[in-house]
Image (cartoon, rainbow, N blue to C red; front, side, top):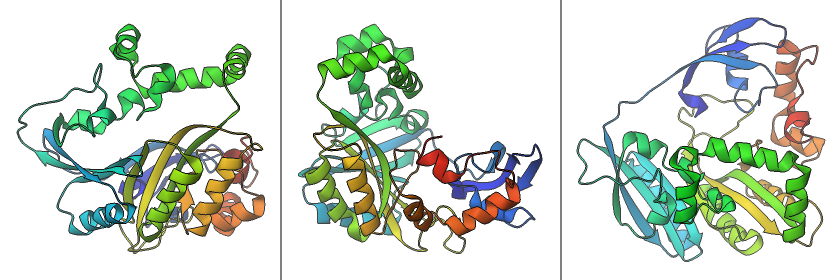
Length: 330
């Protein structure tokens, strides 16, 4: 997404406001800002590229039952570029879906997933669907993909009691933060549940290794459903120093967010995921729980390039560094 950005107005730690572009004196900050997680400054304004749209999006859900064929189809769609949108949903190892979307001027009908109907459940039951462009963009938000299940909101009566206005990720996020801070909520969770490990991750795996990673998730982690989205560098001639992607390489983003029952030490499943991602030459988003050592983190996230940015734009260390913020959670 950062490749749509053309200009960044940034508040630096020393109070200065600078404008960074690809070609001006702050170009190093422009290319180093993605994946810096607020450790180099804060964005005040963005100038981004837009694309023209049409009023509606036609969705087609394609079912597969084999990992290899599934990811070959993803790659083919990305090469052909015959549709406007591609993503996928993995329900089981034999129940895999690719959803393609196309902008259209007129829709045969319109579905509404902003209240009692649940978008992700429709994928298995509808071959074709129609949404407004607005509802397509926000199609996952009503149920936070499928994480609303933790608030018992997969049941129609609970959705009705909850109310349409509160069916949104911003509300769920606030509740989740409260539950993590509340001693009472934590005590109740421990009293009624087995030991669990939160596994909240987004990782990007090269397309040729995607079947192996999907099989690993199925056998070793067990979270279902899993969201997938193909991603590649928009402009292979440029490089973002803290978000390295090989030019002309297609990756698959796997998004999986849940808790896993465990009898292992803290972080067992997240550490296994980190090791697998590294083995398969992928990378993970740093918003999630991380267990990397300083040395490993430095190797994976360009410590040398990051240190140069830190010296130039935060030499007094007013903001935490990337490892402190994303791994140590300071």
